[in-house]
Amino acid sequence: MRSIHVLGLVVTAFAAVGCAGGGSGNSESSSDTLTVVYEATGTGKASSITYNESGSVVPKSVANVQLPWKKEVKVDKDVRTSFSVTAESAVDDEGNITRQEVSCKLTVDGKAAATKTDPIIATCERMPS
Image (cartoon, rainbow, N blue to C red; front, side, top):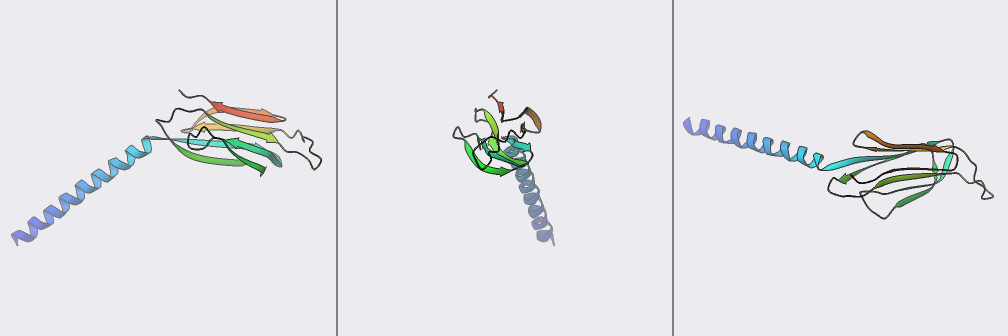
């Protein structure tokens, strides 16, 4: 009987250590990243939306985008880069800017970092701290 109780105690202790280690590892990894949310709003479509993803200095771009549009990315906190999103008004079939108001919003870790509204191009940016 003693060996069964000792074995049960060892398994329980191992499970408790394993859970404690796994729990703290998860919270550390989430605190090592920033959540960046890029948003563009308006009526109709934006001719293009440009943003930087995962702290990259090379921007990403999407064209002819139905609004509202939203993109969320995780970025390593050690990356020192600016974050930006630019939304451009739609263009009609003849290539004329429609001048439909567009807005952008940049949120970093749940805090609004920048907002802007413009009839042609709205750019929201946060410089590295």
